[in-house]
Image 1 (cartoon, rainbow, N blue to C red):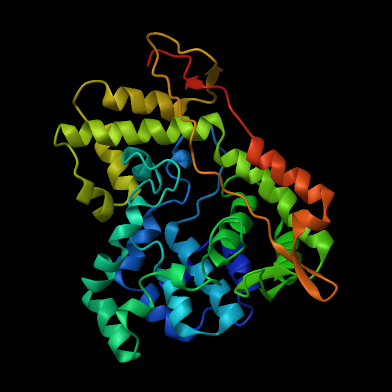
Image 2 (image 1 turned 120 degrees about the vertical axis):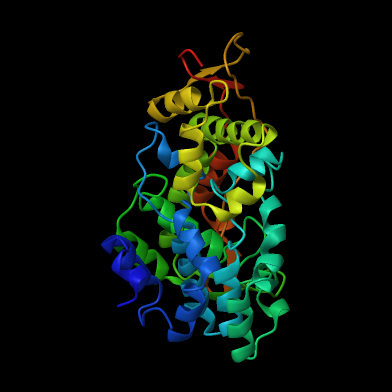
Length: 351
């Protein structure tokens, strides 16, 4: 058995079987086993939040997410190029994932790290040799945005958005549903044509679509809760401070696992960096305030990315946006869009 599978959590294995009942296609393994993809196994999709006691999350790596996206694309298209584009879409993910977007000031789109995807693939002798072997061009797999089943604009449903909603609800963000729930939802999805005549993933049944959107609404709020914004900004500021002092480089974030980066932070002798990290790591809650609190490390972020989905659903002989035919879904989506936290967040400790 492949070493990656041997070490994989049994629930994640069963989740993968739901996404691709036939298993992981054979052609995909050579790409999964490349150095560039395996590096993603040391990065959590939690953007670093998993390392604080404020959260109760299961480990789910960037590699797990990438494989799951590829399996969804393969399940609905059986197209190698689209599937590989799905697999590679996060190959440029650094340690702490979107936290680096926060460091770059990209709170709203959270796409600043994607620019390196082409360079990483192009500079990999392993990946380029495999592509040549399979008769696939770089430009056919380096941008998953060109394949609407793999990715599309919010609030449409595509493989990437579907995957992180399913896995995050399994405990990656918070345990909201079980594998049986995921199976019922996934088996109800099909390829449909949207209002622009473009292929999109959609639901066959209105009630199942409503269940999906209800959970999505909960997750959408959790992505923007004060604890998450605070943690991501704290980690971003920590890395930025260490970078300014030449204690770590941006390249290190792409070369090292999160475990290795954390070791550098914990062993840092400059200032209070290691002390502050320990405080954050052991914190169990944050404090919110409408006013800035003096002498506290206060975080204030208003324009963070809003993740939500308004999927298509089969409605007689048409495919319709769910919120147009479901008051329940419309209310859930509005709840997600209108979610707000207080302006400032801080830790009630000597930080």
